[in-house]
Length: 72
Image 1 (cartoon, rainbow, N blue to C red):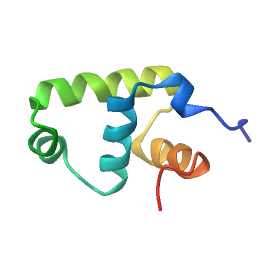
Image 2 (image 1 turned 180 degrees about the vertical axis):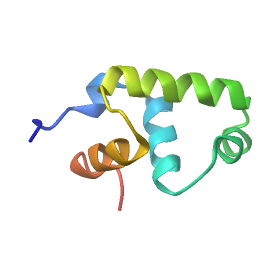
Image 3 (image 1 turned 120 degrees about the vertical axis):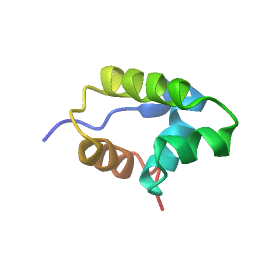
Image 4 (image 1 turned 180 degrees about the horizontal axis):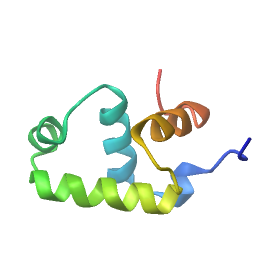
């Protein structure tokens, strides 16, 4: 099992916000509308999140978010 990652130290506030919305089943388009940013910006944030956290899938991202108490 991988050690717990300190996500707040690793990711920006916006990236953390996007993770929270992903775990609430928001689509890229929904996230973009909710945050008043473009869908392309959301896609770039997601790509950066995956790169920084070294996760390979949304499931892996959700598990990581749960381990870091980002989801309720």
